[in-house]
Image (cartoon, rainbow, N blue to C red; front, side, top):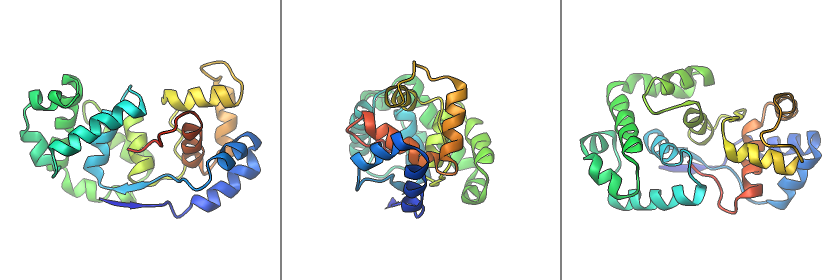
Length: 208
C-alpha cells in the first residue's frame, strides 16, 4: 500500500486560513501533519467499515489485530474466511458480513473499480452504496482517504459535527444553514477542513 501527501495540501491550507479565522487557529495548532492518501482500495474500505460508529482509538486497535492476523489482505482471502474468525479479532457479525460483501464486490467488478479514479464523487458513492453495509459515510471516507478527493464534507460524521459545535460555539448538532455557510467558505477544500477539525478533538489522526 502506498502513502502520500495530497498535492493540493498547501494550497488548501492557504485558502482555508484566509476564509476562516477559527479554522486558521486550528491549522496553526497542528502544523506539520497532513491527511494521508492510501492507494489500496480494498483495505481502505475494510478500515472504514471497522471504523463505523466507534472511536478512532477503538478502530485502530481492531485494525492492528486484523492486520496481524491477515498479513496478506485480498478480497479472495476475506471472502473465504469464516465469520467466526473475523469476530475473534473484534468485529461484530454485521461488520464481518459487510467486509465479506465488499470482497465479493471487488471480485465481481474489477473493470469498474479500475475506473474509479476517473469517475465523479457521486458516481463512486452510487457504486459503493450498492454494496450492503456501505453507506454514505463509508463512501465519503473512501473518497477522502483513498482517492484523495479534496472537497468532501461528511456531514454524517459525528466527530466532525462535534468539532464544529465545540470550535464554533454552536449547539449540537449544528444548524443546516451554518453547515452550508462553512461549506461555501471551505469550497473546494472541505476534505482538508474536515481533517483539521477532526485533529482538534482527537490526538489520534483519523486514518482509513
